[in-house]
Image 1: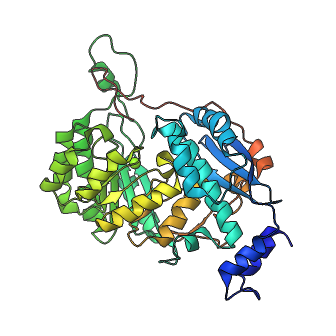
Image 2 (image 1 turned 135 degrees about the horizontal axis):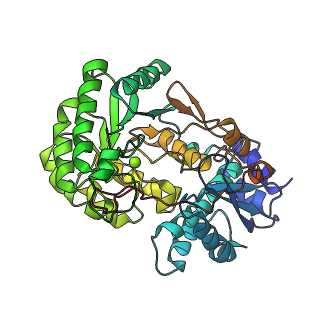
Length: 440
Ligand code: MG
């Protein structure tokens, strides 16, 4: 009997049940200690996004885990950090020592808490939790305390060029079962975030001499257009559907305060990223000014960025991109901390989170009392071929498949069919009329 089978018998309630600790010791005696034997980085692009997946192998035949280390814009930097630094650090270690590995890898670079090393650590951390779940013969959500809900409610994205088109999309999603919808609308004549750019010739002509060509974003027309959008949607759709809107840190803080106050009668589910991470202390001011619920955090990489917002109850939803802070081990602590302060979770979940990352979001969502909502990403047939076991979406909910561990794997042969088309990407193409760069 190999080690996995021996432990599987324990989980299955064999003759050893009743004295599990003693039985565990007996079952383990005489077996080679479990060790990490290899760490692989798999780079694949089955859709629009450059994904980075970590696969950790062990000395038990067939026992491996996968984790998400995806930083879409700078994936090769993450891959180098894993291959050159984390892999030699991990070979030979016990994959069940998850907390010790996380804490020791976190400080191994001395300088820490940057997005590259956090993502690298996340890939390792997720793979170790996957291995633990497989050994325990339990889905990850059980290791986190068990399901507190049957499935995960999702919000989907509606994005359009015109108000009528947006309203049609919203109605379509409501008919599909969604109760939470993110709404983004093109700004006539200008570029914006989350909807098609409509930079008009008039805007280009309004620029001073010497500005290169680029899409034009201006905060004032964006703010006015967003208020008009909610006026329209609430008049046509009513108030029984929850709307989300993402400012994406694009406007000066005082205009974000004006926008949040102006949207108050429209009772949003949340207004996302009204400020940039560099301006988070504005939340203390905004909180005193408006009842509009506030969400923040997809760019956070360091606990000093989110902790004051949570402990002061300045935000209502934490939007962290889990791989960017170092993965599940830390995200679980963030979630527990938020629960103590009445802040709900809304983990970042668009296409630049790999399906493995989405699986981690889902397991945490299933087991968190202070879950708020989960951002949806629909997986194509091609993506599902690369990631067998990717969570299922139906009627506005995400469902776990109940396999041990994360319940998802990577088919390396399928992944190899979709190599990177470019070594990452860059953001920040929009500029103000005068040529100043705008946050992405
Ligand atoms: Mg966002």
